[in-house]
Structures are given as C-alpha cells and as structure tokens.
Length: 218
Ligand code: DX5
Ligand code: ZN
Image 1 (cartoon, rainbow, N blue to C red):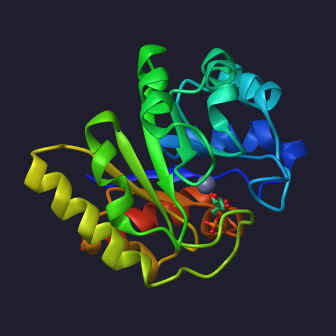
Image 2: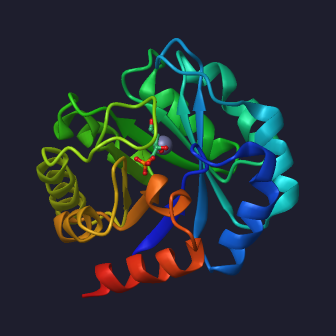
C-alpha cells in the first residue's frame, strides 16, 4: 500500500499543532520533517527543538529529512529528539555506510537520499544498509516546486535493483507531488509519497489526502 508522508515545510508554524492533529485524524502514515541548515541547501528551516515538540504532539512516525552538511554530526541528536526515520543526503559529506549503520544502531530506520543530479546507481552499494531510499524530484531547499519527470526512471532503476537483490525497501519520492504526479511516482516504483504544498494549499487536508489515496489506488 502507498504511504503518505506530509511535509510541514509550508505550514503556518503558529498553527502547526492543529495541522498535525488534523493530519493524524485524516489517517496519515507519517510526518515528513525537512531540516535545513542554510549550507547544504540555501534555506534554513528548523532543528531538534521543533522535532522534540512535534514528538510530544503526535504518535505518528516522524520521517526526518536532513538537508544538512556532514549529517553524521547530528544523527544522535535527532534520534534523541524523537525521529523514527533519519534520512540524509549521499552528497552531504559524511561516510555513507558508517552513517547508515549509526542510524540503525540507535534503533532508528535509515534512509539514504539523492538529489536530482545524482544517479540512481550511486545508492546501489548501500542498499542493504537502508530501510528507505529517498529520491528527490525537486532541488532540495523549498516546498512548492514542480516535479522533475527525470526522477521517474531513477525510482524504477532503484526498485528494480531492490527486487533483484530481494530487498523489501521503501522508496520515497519528495517534491512536487500532486494529483497528476502521485500516480506516476507510484507506477515508477515509489511507495512513500511526500506531500507538502498539495495538502497545505488545500481548503480541506483530510479531503485532499483521501483524493490522493484514491488517485494512486487506480
Ligand atoms: C524540499 C523538501 C520537500 C518539500 C516538499 O527540499 O525536501 O519535502 O517540502 O514540498 P512539496 O510537496 O510542496 O514539493
Ligand atoms: Zn523533504
């Protein structure tokens, strides 16, 4: 079944608690938390204290997407803050295998993430250490951008490789997911969809989430 991971990046942070409760009630599968440091990406979002507060506000799975330089320095901090899945970028300057292992040793799920220009094959040597692979379908840094169709072939290449290796891995796609692109990503082999703007621009997030579920089930 396809899982949805709503990104709170474009939420009104004053009303974050209410939005999280609404998403919980709408039966979302997890929550996607975009951490940005202004160095790895040209934007700054939030860090551990916000993750810690969100942890207290919901029991849902917290899917933390680290867009930070040398992420190994902060794995333990985000684990303590309450992350369930810790994802980091292959391009961010940490030892990839060591960082993936460190995440699992902390009892968390590991996720390796690639930017649009990074080939699918770059994750192949690490797949056995990953619970999830995140394929970015926009340049990381901002919500509300357009989906890059080139990401579809990368998703398929990773799904095929996982099948070939007998790995039941989650493949998440992040950026520009909407009613049109969600089914394309799923057909390509993704089973976790990050949804930011498509939900937060809706008058009714519960209704929009139900519509998305319907469109990917077809
Ligand atoms: C971008 C973030 C995404 C973003 C998704 O750097 O990683 O998670 O918030 O937002 P939408 O769905 O609006 O593209
Ligand atoms: Zn993200």
